[in-house]
Length: 604
Ligand code: AGP
Image (cartoon, rainbow, N blue to C red; front, side):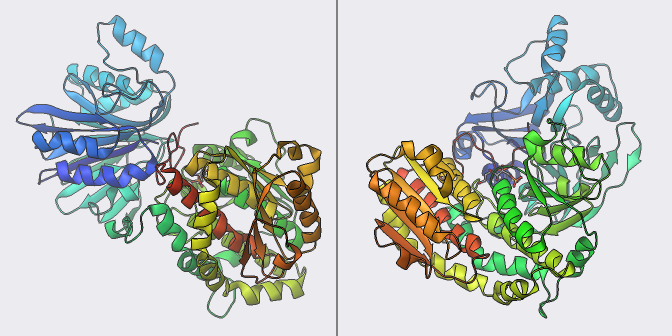
């Protein structure tokens, strides 16, 4: 998704803006640009491709000025080009925008009929023309903004720079995230806390319908009716040092390796040192729902599917897991005595947010499992549980995924205990919880073997992932990880489904990556693997300690530390993440920002 930054300061702003755009790279983009006001002129520079292309252009012609805006563009309307890159300029106005203006064509036609010339194919450019028109009628910033917001339909987060009043920025949001930052003689506005790290000491998240008018000394926030409103001011805990690769080659590798620590932090969010559940969690389970509906997208959806296996078998609560983008359009039944659980790393996925709002309209309570504190989904949920994975920069989600699993397992155990269900099993699993970070660290030590396996599959046209029970959703996640970072087609199946069709895909040398738990159906999976092997598959098995001796025919077998069959999906996440990462490295793809992908999908 696009990234936005605006800075108003008593110092030159170009370096602030460029540093922020580099921090915003993780959102995924295809071009970038910057605009400032200096010597009473609007100056701008845009470049296709990576930020470094923009930096190269600025080297010869740096932009001076104490007020400026910047943008990383993820194309929605119009191809990748400098003309379509932001900022968009109209007369004395420059704007940067994230979102989709649904009625842009109608607005564009109307403005064109009044003689306005458009330079891009984008929807965003209409915002620049609308403000330039309002200012040409000598409207105040506040009135101009209210008039423009009355016209726009759709999702927007934008920042406006005005040549005639360069010290002042206008910012507005609706359904796309936007935050204001306050600092020493420097105020700012950006897509998220990461954009504002290092610039802002405090952060104010705008709500849908808010707009703000700010300079380096004052910040005024208004609602759509022009009433002045107050929003919570929070410390911006994000430190630029957190957003660096350290000694790792990519953010994805760094974040895979952070998991022993992030899992340990997430466990301590759920349990006190005496093993008792946290106050927040005990409040949540007090709600005692008759059913649970999980709403999520992508990797977070697969975490939800694993959670379903755990909660239904151990807490004995019925769980429905929904693809968020499908949920609200199929007129679902919503159990008034139920609980909605939304799972989202960014807390800004529009599909998940809109599905949650749809469900909440029926009065049902909602809990969000969130990695981004202060995000929209966090702020709009009745309860929130924070995955302590820290800022996840790589587009491919890894440490947030295992942190989501820890949160779901903890919720499951807490509900089971409250309902007095399967208490012996629960105690056994709880006794192993604090051992998970160590087991994950041990699983990471298999990286060199994974590198060899990756070199064997990197030339494959396709790969299959198999699993049973809670390892079936993990097979789906493994296939997604490989697809999104290495661009190799992959599909995940329940091993029991092979004979119902997918086995027709098996041909000589086709890699079949199978997850094998030391549990009740491992022998059935072994017979599925023999069938695949008999048809030429190249078998790569990630097996629980104790299950590996059931397989003496695999091409590659990687033994995983075993704590408990319920915990296996968390540990087995490590080799599938490492395999996707190293296959992508071997392939030479843009591992942290894979083509066409965004870290947070904030447009439908
Ligand atoms: C995961 O690797 C992908 N980047 C993607 O599927 C992601 O999980 C999905 O877009 C949901 O994002 P969220 O967790 O921030 O809502």
